[in-house]
Every structure is written in C-alpha cells, then in structure tokens.
Image (cartoon, rainbow, N blue to C red):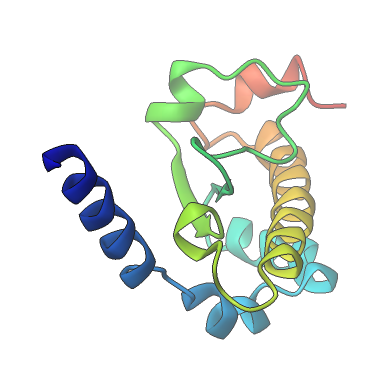
Length: 132
C-alpha cells in the first residue's frame, strides 16, 4: 500500500508541475531568425549553444558529428529549451519540441561556424578540426 501511495503522490506532483513556459517563450525562438540571433550573440562576444530538454537527457542539436569535450561542456555556456517531460502535457507539445529542435539546430550550427574561427573563444581551436 505504501508503494501505491508513493506512486500516486509522484504522478500527482509530476502532472501538477508540468511547465508550459516554452509555449509563451516560443515566439522568441523563431527558426527563421536563429542564424541572425547567433550572429548577434557572437558579435556581443557571447558564445553559447542551445540544448533541448526533450527526454531523459538534453539533446544537443547540431553537435551530432562533433566530439563533445570538457571545454565544450564545462567551459562553454549552454542555454536549455525545456520542452521535455516537464511539458509533455502542454498543448501542442510535439510542435513545441519540433520548433525548439529546429531553432537550436540552426542557431548551434551558425554559432559553431562562427566560434571555430574565433580567437577569443576558448574552445575555438578544437572546433576548427571538426567544423567545415
């Protein structure tokens, strides 16, 4: 009976904490503007990338062919678009997830290209070997 109560409590807290913030924020993440946003951030010397929380762990769109290193993970700023388990019960969840993946893929690829040529970005040299 204790296990049943624990499971029920977990499910109630999980559903009650569903976070649909990305529905409100999604207008700021228009995939058509992703490359422009990356360029603007780079010009401000703000190299960062987007991860998408769309499962048990975040995906890193645009990094499929790149070896994730200590520098890229620990020494680089990452922003997370939360469209995973915490928003699975939001309206249009699949559309939110697809938009987040599309935006972050375009942003990350552009930022990777820019950062690989940067003299000030601490991981730029290691990106030169993998970014076309």
